[in-house]
Length: 206
Image (tube, rainbow, N blue to C red; front, top):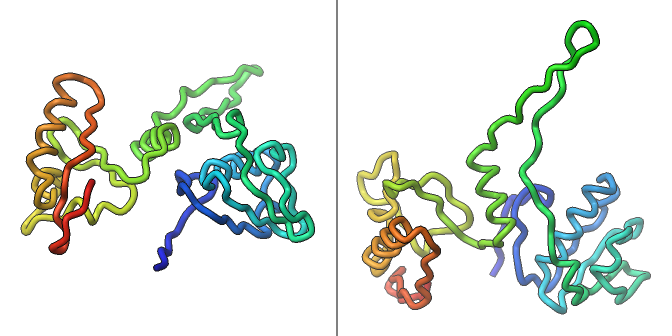
């Protein structure tokens, strides 16, 4: 009935379709820019009629267009239907800095290459993918996001690199192999909405 997870509201992709977010006495410790970012995440994460509860000393600031007041005394707000409010502007973090050198000049260091985690999380924030696995052209798993236990299991004797086809549960191996081949050869998104995966003797739609 309950799912417990360590989650960074400023860095991790937000959950989705939540009925209630209770975030009390956190925003007061963030600067204005970070507050706006977190509130935008909350707006996306909530269901159309979802509610947000803030601390007694907190407010929506300049993000009040994303929510409407339901009970101001108890800092209870409801998600608005604003289309523009749900559009988030998210980019890769900039890590370059200017290093002072002699004679008053500055040496500009090139931006550090983003890590696989940063690239993946940026993709997730763009497309709001709830559960995914990033693989290379050989089918080896490079990054896992979310709970994939319903779809993948580590094969007996499996060692690194982890092969996604060998790890796929019964019913998923063949369509997954075909989908990966089509994605690589056709260079486009492949969507298979009716694949049935067997987990714990129960067939679940993927």
